[in-house]
Amino acid sequence: MRCRQNPIANGDGYYFGLMTKSTRVLVVANQKGGVAKTTTAINLAASLAMANQRVLLIDLDPQANLTSGVGLKDRATDAGTIYEALIGEDVTPSAFVLPTSVDHLSLVPANRQLTGAEIELVAFANRERRLRPFVDALRADFDYIFIDTPPSLGLLTLNGLVAADRVLIPLNCEYFALEGIADLLATLDRVRAGLNPALALEGVLLTMYDDRTNLGQQVSHNIREFFGDQVYRTVIPRNIRLGEAPSHGVPVILYDARSRGAEAYVALAHEFLARERGQPPSASGATPDDPPPGADGVDEKGRP
Ligand code: ADP
Ligand code: MG
Image (cartoon, helix red, strand yellow):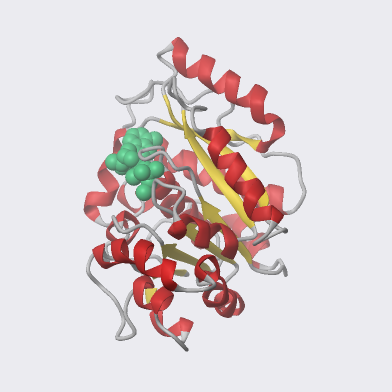
């Protein structure tokens, strides 16, 4: 499926497309499962691609949800998947890149075989640095590279953190959202202390926000108190279309561009790009003072 609608390529997208800047490598990390790491990687990447940015997704999770979420389950080039890229010697990184159905959006896929890498990597002297040269070799071809990680702080996630310039942390607005965050922050400190001193925090994204509950508001308040300005103003609402899109193998923007889930990720892409330019956050995104209306059902305009 080719993209027919392009909600962010007009105006801003054209402008952003003219920007000259160096490639940014982002790792999406949180050792908790189900916080929307993969959903954020797919949909932020797709929204940026639709704003004429050249974007690469790298699937570093043996569950391969990112790969299936862009409709490329069990697909790979002759070179193989990210597993062969990590374990092999003298690989050609560009040979692993697959195009997706979204213009400007490419993928280095994964499959279940990657489960073995967590153990096999231990045998390598530079076990945490296997991904970095692979990613560095691809910088010239892309504006943004997003690495999706598994729900653990094991060797695969470490490889992602060592290969990246910045970390994006999705947190779901539920009671235990901040539980375990100390372990993640300690891991970031350890990586900075040795393996990747330049690793910075890109931002914290509130996901699965349900404004029907006081809990969502309370948790988002606590997270903002803890992380301050590092939290994106854009909040991703709980939205059924975001859960449905992966089974159709497309980003939500191609599945239902009018859904609140799609609009939220487009707003996030705007805020992300504005931050890249060092501008104050755009007012287009939902904010905690102006949360997206409704929750899992339809909003007041009858949208899903
Ligand atoms: P992670 O990669 O952190 O494990 P996922 O991105 O796979 O998390 O999300 C977990 C599940 O929740 C998936 O089924 C996904 O489709 C769904 N999901 C993610 N974000 C939302 C949302 N905002 N609203 C509703 N469902 C969501
Ligand atoms: Mg995932």
